[in-house]
Image (cartoon, rainbow over all chains, first blue to last red; front, side, top):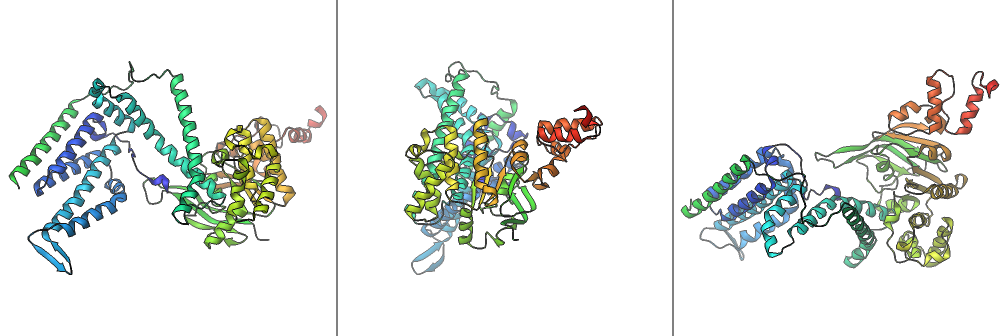
Length: 268
Length: 288
């Protein structure tokens, strides 16, 4: 069912990870990704995995939720893994039949690549699981603030993002409802060829667009009647502030990246 | 007589196997005979909407079954499809499902999906439009240019054009003005046609339910809490209030009288009944 999509899902909580400033979490995620792509040796990987594992433990997000978030990517992970398995040439031949040969190096790369993708997603999932969409966009806006100097409409972009995130569940629910209503009138969304299927989507898409425009219109009116006029001079109810724990977390992140780079240099 | 619709230990769980799992409908046994006019009430989240979506096969039960004319509606794909047309379901705020360029084509969507011949479709569209009081001149207009009340009528005509044997409506009068509500209830009664067709409808308004339905089914926490004639249901007014259902004002007046010690029949739901009940009460006749 559509309702089961966990995209951008937020699991409220009151753990250290939840309490971190969203900016800290955003920067940490970037550091984590950088470390992940720098790590090419076992020790480096181990460190990255350790970092993620500790973060997950601290956040009290159940591993099952992370795994279910990874589920939609199984195919991408598998394809990447298989391609790497067959196309990596090396010295230690493992299997050879017909025109296919698998090297030990291929197995290694395949595992590492699959692991890398999964770790990448798991890390970003942890960010969205522990940070509410509102906090996330606030953090993003604050981090991108310097770009205002070169006339990037940072506030407007952030506002657009939070509105979009806010309306995803609403639109999913709406889609579900309209689909049911049309199916009750005999609409068939499943069978038929590509063209028949595309045509069958019209009774779904048209009402969905109409209602999205209506909602946008209503939202704009509601915002204007509350005197919204962009980011100029706008204050916040919840000010972002960096606490001691944020600096410590960032220091840990920097240390992680430094160690991973060191391990890569040393080649252990 | 075989009931036209029947559910056997119907259970529906949302998000099965996730931490968000929730039982919306819990082993409900229900049956409707041909020609009945049934009102379904219950407060928000009592499972009534989920329940009715099983009756035309839109939702598949997690366990239990739904029978149409004694046959499981999920017994074959073809039968499920047939049941969709024979059990017409009108959703809440149905005007948001309109999509065609003209009113005519929108009403024709259902009949066309039934693979009827063009002249049959034409006849049904005109009949259904006339039934809900839409004039010829409206048929060529875009549904998006109509007023809210007219859009609602178009949506209802879209279901009626399939000529379902059972018509199910989810809060059909929500958001309409009193005049519109009145007209719509009249239309539904006319579709019921004195018992030729079956009507099941969800409503929040106990007044509506009491006035039109022969039978009221009360949902609470995914179960059927009460099932009977309006009087039988209203006799349990106190329980209704505990379930978060708003009972008619006149019923509440009578309940209060009873509380104050007057031995009066408080299963009434209209002013006339209340007057009659008061007259019957000991000594009431003299004073009236």
